[in-house]
Length: 334
Image (cartoon, rainbow, N blue to C red; front, top):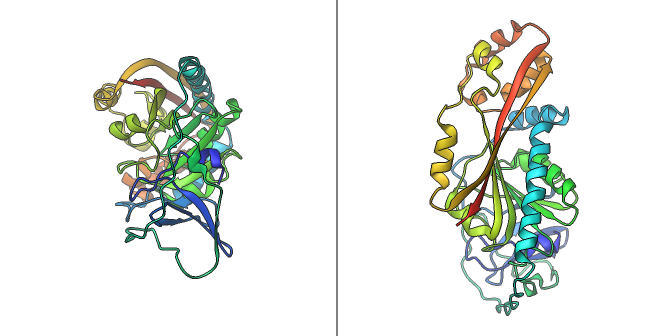
């Protein structure tokens, strides 16, 4: 794993720093207390401290999202996030230019302890090698190479777009869906991916993150506040009231709560101050299969009868014209 990302990570069990180890062909991240977390052969690391309460998007939902996004239909969202993140990092660099550099923490000696959840012990067995002590670098040094975290990253498409616009940044995709993380691990050469539950403590150091993306995903205000640099920015993408309105009416899909924007701000108000908002719109011209993919990648896939939905989709006239309307809200920690 890229050491610029690794030294921002923390053990989800005890909060200690992590280092990469190898034993034969197996790779893992391990803390000084010997909690160990496997790196899957697909490239993502399991940083759950125990079992997740849900498994996230299914392989079918992830495949539908990947196909739809790859066709460029939601590039309006990618472009909006890339522009907002570029502005956010510029602001952070200007703010942190006069900060004193923190003193690197001294490494802790390894100690044995009981491993919980999905972690495992690595003492014994095949010979093990540990990467250089990345703990020597302070995790709060976000201006040297800004860390962009996407909480609820899905396939990592939006994270990849942001990193493409920020050549000095590195990225971390967090999601609870293994099918999604298999794709997110390959979203960008400067990105890593980790299995993590947004509702639990995030496996990141305090103030380690420059920009935190949250796109159509759950929000944990307390944890987002903890991991963001004081000059960092939270970018939240939510559907506006007329998002996919044509499909909502024709297919009887879930409707956007008209008070959603106020509810989002209210849920974050204890930790964040609104710093800007913009609505981005685009008109799509889709085939029926593309419309089906769009429905399949969203929450209506969980709540709509499949047979009834298929019948309504078959009755749609082609081309299918659809409005994309999303809000991008910026928040700053307070």
